[in-house]
Length: 143
Image (cartoon, rainbow, N blue to C red; front, side, top):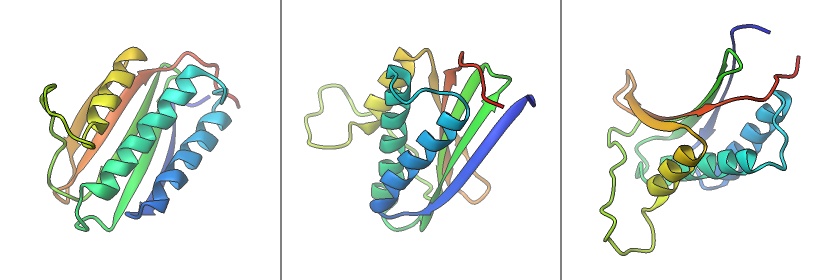
């Protein structure tokens, strides 16, 4: 196997794209050897759902598309990124804030931590950002 594998998909910033992003990630990770009936697979599905939902809901029409990136590095680390062109970065809400929405990043951080991973945000050349989740990978990759 090569030192890394990559997969990318750009979707319109529309609510129906959230499920398309989730299906795409599941398909790619299954091709890379991840069984779909594991807690790890469930966590990744929830993470991509939350990131895609954020890219659709919180860009206020200023990002017509978002991109899902998957990178598997040396069969050791999975990077999952969602990129949009909106300049506002995700913010942490105080734990005491009571509201019906806005907890996606809290969920994502908790899931990443439970899986031994971490969350980072990087700027893009067009003024947007990519939210990256890095997770350890211990599944043998399918050829």
